[in-house]
Length: 173
Image (tube, rainbow, N blue to C red; front, top):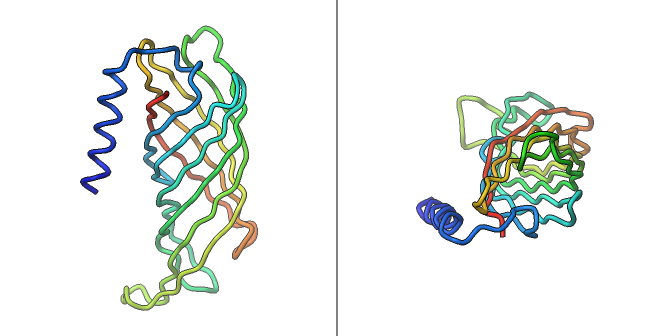
């Protein structure tokens, strides 16, 4: 955890120390998102209108009962979304985006709420969406975003729906 904080501090320090270029002319964004999932985020700006967003971390914390037991938490989570972007009229540096992709997660099912040592780990796979706003800070290679992520599971619980979301920031280079 200390190394994670050091990396984040270094990225933010570099972001404010480096000469700024217009964020949208850059190709990559690297940062953190806090929410569901909480993750490292890597965004590849493919063009002025499209991007690919990759998130690796932990998330989808929810309580749910099913035939496997009570789902209490999720371990690893990998989410990838293809995004369509557009400027928000009258707001310099603000973009609206939406997209679709997939999420792979590993979660633990606990059979007895009183015992944390009896559980089963299973993988989950589903379709995810993304709807959000991203703000590029003027004269700094930093962007901030707020995003909602609807999720529909395909395996192992078809049509289970969850709504996640996150707030985050990226160093754009």
